[in-house]
Length: 214
Image 1: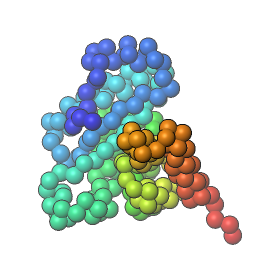
Image 2: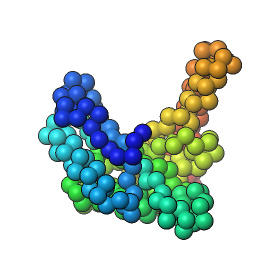
Image 3: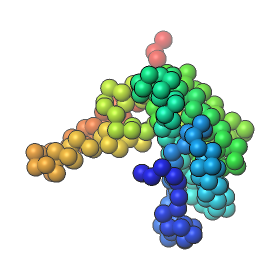
Image 4: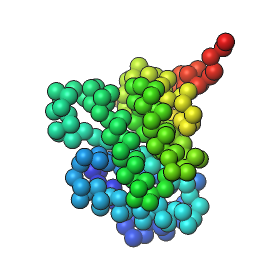
């Protein structure tokens, strides 16, 4: 994806959405609240246009938020990406969501990066639903991480009211697809493995969501 959000079809974005008449209109946005202010404001302006249009029409707004580290943020954790993900990113995500909301951008579904602590999941849902937004929900994205990491993210999010599922891509299909393209497995075997990977994450999420027996 690109660093700055923009309309792929320019001024024809509304016509393009209407042509397909989707249930959801999705954006992918990289936004760090401590990043370049002018770039953030430019992105917010474009997103506000889309939000206003969607409010006047049918599609729900699905917002995929990525919060890449700024150099000084990564330096503050000695260049350790895992420490950034655990120690800094959750609060940066919350701040990014707050700034987007304060700009009048109304999101229906936040597709957000997994976090390592359940308390951070709760914090992010609280922000998503702040200001009378009780019907807003969140889903976890996979970010192409390995199974163990995605399993952990799902286990933290699933029990939290406000998380309703996941939207995982590469962690499900990348390895089987690559093996098929490289001629290492047959098409049917690749499809079977993709299905197994998907069902694995469904099982992890459903087990974590289930109430604990007393």
